[in-house]
Length: 228
Ligand code: FPP
Image (cartoon, rainbow, N blue to C red; front, side, top):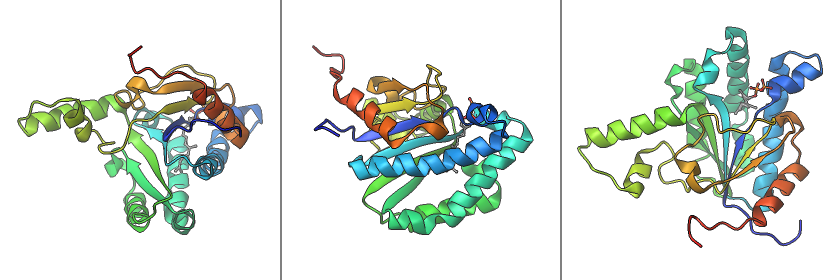
């Protein structure tokens, strides 16, 4: 890649797993499985390129209303990832942080999420935020209620600290695959000045080179943050 301005934080909406599988006459669960593999590949490449923070939208609050069978398949992928990939994450020196209300997940998955977060807490090469049962509106309402409970008027920094992403810089670049042009309740507050990049590729086929293209595109943009 030519010399470029790297985003410090990239967030991914990994959309299109189901359609990718359907086009291959495979079940949607297969698309999610390949989606996880691609998550390793693309996020790993982001860290190799020097990106320090990556956030992925693994399960929205609304996704839980999908047919039971699909939700179960997603849970099974979480079970494998959080249960069996702890060492791999440690080898990659990537700290895992799960964002969202995990209390609705099966107890064994909650347990392995906490274990993975604990066992990668010392990793410093990069931070991978995994949004699970996450919804931005729910996050904002929760933050407002926390501020009220503390009896506090908050400024922007104070409010941000009540969000589930408290302490994490906002995403510089949000990439959505799958051809849809919306944020779907993802990081709505944090995305105020994020650059948005949409790809028509389905998530399982979004390649390392596609990531580099998105970063090159970001690098050529003029971010003014409302100023001139
Ligand atoms: C949207 O594609 C994607 C999801 C609902 C889940 C994506 C999750 C993963 C790829 C990985 C899970 C992460 C871990 C850590 C195990 P879609 O199925 O809605 O696509 P469609 O629009 O084609 O139906």
